[in-house]
Image 1 (tube, rainbow, N blue to C red):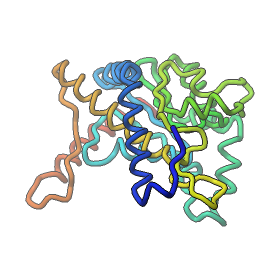
Image 2 (tube, rainbow, N blue to C red):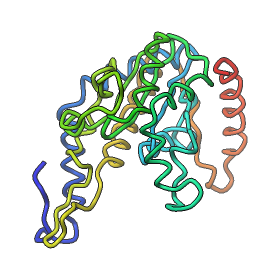
Image 3 (tube, rainbow, N blue to C red):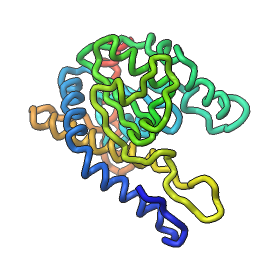
Length: 260
């Protein structure tokens, strides 16, 4: 992706965003289809698509489930110490987060909380794919026979040294790799007078992939005669959305007993 400059006006980030989405559409169809089939198999069997990401890579997990338009079958693994750093300094600050995501063994301990099954799928998001916690989670899933789907920037990861003792990066251990098509460094806009780029692209790439995949999984489930339990929006007057969401939440809770 070519650098964008200030001369292209206030819409320059939107131009870059469209380029990322166009690259995903042009190049990632086969990987998305393969990942969607794995996930459809898991959900059809009343098993789980476990989802994990650290830092801003937890955002596509929130985008997937639970929310309106999301459906039962996705299990967010949300480690608060790796996602709740908006205070910046003090308790749960950025310094602690940056330290923790590089501590080898932390991800292994996280995964000891969950009973994974080979019929599950593990879906991991990481722009760089190099940090220890991400690799711990991926390797723990593979050790238990669970296929791993990675959504990552292959360009960034290939150009960056791993931080895990395995010597591997996420794209090198995953069973299916969906490239977010975001360039090395994440941010995509160069402005005259600024050393570092602005306008990160990884969240856009992640959400473009996550929504594409979950819609494709739903389509494949419907083709098998399985209607996904989709949460409606709870903010339309006169609808029975609250009752529907409560019913689906109880089903989620029932299935989750297999995980703990």
